[in-house]
Each structure stands twice: as structure tokens, then as C-alpha cells.
Image 1: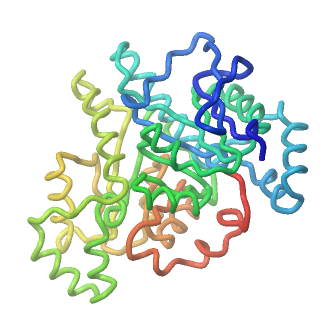
Image 2: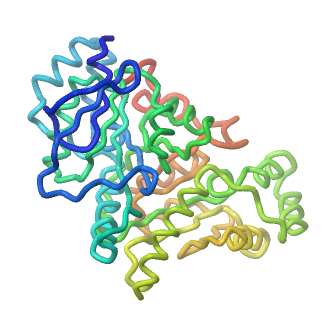
Image 3: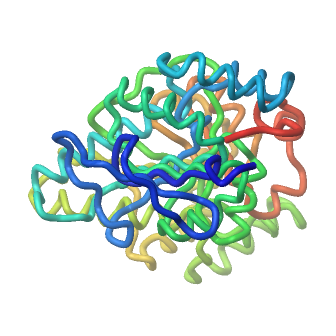
Length: 366
């Protein structure tokens, strides 16, 4: 792989001067056309999204797997003026941009905004088609990392990524192991219309917002011991899970709207959707959030009932859960669901998590 294939594109369209980034990746910069300046990474809430999470690249992935890299690159170049179709994370990113629009209206000089970075292990030749697709949909994504097959972890850390969304479960697992909030995004089984002006994010509790402490008790000793444990420890906050920091970041942005008297018109809404039962084990979950100074707008305790039907009513842009059973159930009913590979539940996964080719092929580009 040549150094040209390892391209880091930052802040703006394409075709300006290059300079070296690190040892192999290179950077490109040009001036934006009537677009706001991206916030500095240290000030922003950075969402890193892979090309296959943002766009539907199933056809291209099949070519890569079946015919190899050279045919894959040739196809991308031949079709580079054709925009990719939206992928599962596309509505989420559009809603994020709607929140930024509101924030810039209220706080013109603030850099406390979402910043979306396209993170991909793709070859630099694919960059033109990705840029054309982003411009086609009028997305405000100025920062690209295209690593030509190299690990993304160093770049995720350099950008202070608050969340990494990918279609590659192996890369997500690597990020989680490095302490980066991450999830594998799955396409829903049907199209569901989601709000365009309010970002809706739903979280499972245990092993997502919270640690898997309580889930370990349940797996090892059963439901009765779980209830006993939660009752005995209801005043002891749970340790944090991998996405606690992302909920915290959303909460900080919500507070900016509340400060302007827009609590009832806030463009961010969060949900706790948990299999816990309210009376038997819900107290500890709510007290844990309170001890962190956090809250969700809605808390749904389903007492073991399927989450899919409730999520179908909520219509979130994304739902995070650590168990593939719940991810699959949500996706079947039209929710964009994201799997967080963290905690005791990962020792036993469903057939879909192990065997679905499109989500975990033998070789793939992101």
C-alpha cells in the first residue's frame, strides 16, 4: 500500500496542497464555501462515523470481497460521480447537524458543537466519491481520515472522539478495548420516518450507560439473586459503562438550550430503555444517573418485555444495546440499532452477531 493511499483529509473539499501527517498519512486543506468553520476537536463533541455506516456500500463491499482490491478501486473510480445511497447512520448525522444549526443561532461564537469526522480504512481513491456523496446530500463533514487499511485507533484518540459508529464489529471491539465509546450500526429491517429537527438517542442501561456489574449477578445467579443484589445496593451508584460519556456530552448541549428557556423545545431528547423492572431494580439505575448529575428525558423500564415495539413508538435515530437479541428485535421493527460489545453478555452472542456476512466478513473496508 503506497503512502498516497493513506490519506487524512481535514477541513474542506479536495485538491489543495498536501503535507505529511505522521509518517504515512497526508493532509489536505482548502477553503470552505459559505460554510461555518468546524470547531476545534478539543472543544467539540466529536462523532466519528465510518463510510459504510454513513452510506450504503453493500455493492462495493461485495466487489471487494469477491473480486479483490483492484476491481474494487476501478469500480469506485468509474462511479465516483454517483452518490452513495444513505446508510444506517445517515439520519442520525442529519439530526446532529440540525442540532448544530440551532446551537449556532443561539451561541454564534461557541465551539461547543457536534463535529462529525468520516473515519475510514478505505483507499484514498475512494475519497472523491465520498466527497461527492457528502456534497450531494449537503452534509457538513469537513474532516476525513482515510487510512488505507491502517488502524483507526490513533486517529480516534487524536480527534478526542466521543463516539465511533461503524459497520465493522472488529474495529468497534478494538475501540471499546481502548476505552473509546463505540458501536456497530445495523440497518433496520424496514424504513421508519424519524424526526428531522430533534435528535433522539435511546440507551440501554446495564453494560451501556452502566457497568455490567448487575448483569454479571443475573447471569451467574439468576433473577431472584439479581433483585436481592439491587435492593441491597440501591444507594450505591453503579460504575460507568462505555457510553456514559456520550450521554454526558448530550446533557451538556441540552443545558445550553435550557439556559435559553428552550427546555420544552430542545432539539435533543434522550431515553433510557432497559429490561430492568421499575419497582424491583429501577431505583438503582435512576439513583446512579442522579449521582452522576445526569438524566434522560424518558426512562422506560420494560421488566423483560421486548424493546422493539416500544422503540417503534419512540422512533429514535439510534438505539444502543449490549445484547444482539435486543439489537435484532429493534432493527426488525425499523429502529437503527447499534451493538455495544461490552460486558458479560459478549460471551454468548446470537447467530446474527457471529455469522452475518455483511457485518463481519473475512475481509472488509470501512
